[in-house]
Image 1 (cartoon, rainbow, N blue to C red):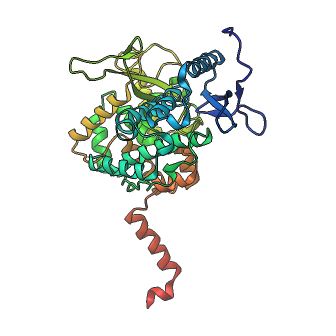
Image 2 (image 1 turned 90 degrees about the vertical axis):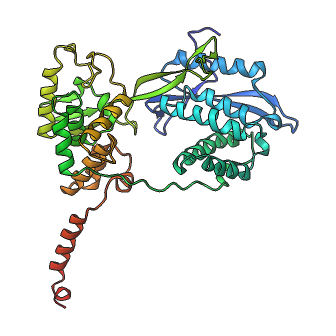
Image 3 (image 1 turned 60 degrees about the horizontal axis):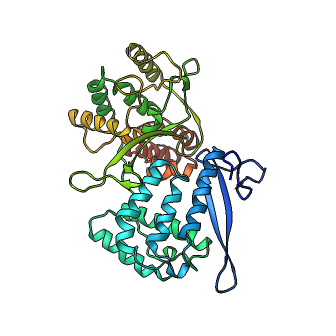
Length: 407
């Protein structure tokens, strides 16, 4: 097959209006490949899916997928094990999901699903198997939230197996779904913020912390912001991308590299991706945030090239990206220094949301500011009424009900 052509079997999924359907900003390519007929006389087909905006990349992935089928990758469903099917799914996920999602799926598959369920035939897997695995993972010390991630991953893979006819039903839908408790998100007090700002002033962490509190943006969104995204005249920051960090196994000739202790070696990758909900948004800035950014621009002028495409918050060299986990570590040290306990960098986002709602910001506006896809997420995660707000509300109710108040 010539490298410059696309196989006629490949199609791009479209929306009702005919435009390409995008997932994480990428087109979704699909193809069905006939694999003959089964013992029941029914035609067997395999579905290929790939997310990419690069046609040649899609073609290479499709050719590799077809070659794998032709060299024994197509196993009779009755003999197909959980380990084999899930491995094929994870391999295909490399081009379908963002790096962080793929890394999480690969880790769950390799470290948890394979040891507990890998030897079971796909068609013999039951909800009882899954419930037992969930229980053993809890006994091993995994949190309910982690077990929930495992369940969602298994459910996703088995859903595709059901669509492909590998299994008759998705047994994960019949398993006991883990129920993690909603974690409490603590907002910092004004006094705590004041201590953080004073301790961070003069460091490169200061403008980042100020912007996080002023905008409620996510860590990756702030680290992915470039000077071209800042509109000083309008006082707006355009959130167009986010930085993600994930680990990939280091390999040589397709084999994993091991260290002296026999443990697998991983490399840390930092890359750009669209914002979490896939949509760019404009975030209004406070005057204090604008002042901090102006001072930051002057302070970094010597190291940073005068380019609109440069990151606002680069690493110490002024060029490369500031690795997200290093920001987390730096903020943890700052919180420890100022004796502000029980918070993380993400707490600044919750603090911004809490302050905005206390100032009278409506939920719809807050949703747009935070970049949530639906208002329900904003209400569930970030809008918590304070005791002071409750007292003010009750006082207003007293004024509205004078007769009841006098009794």
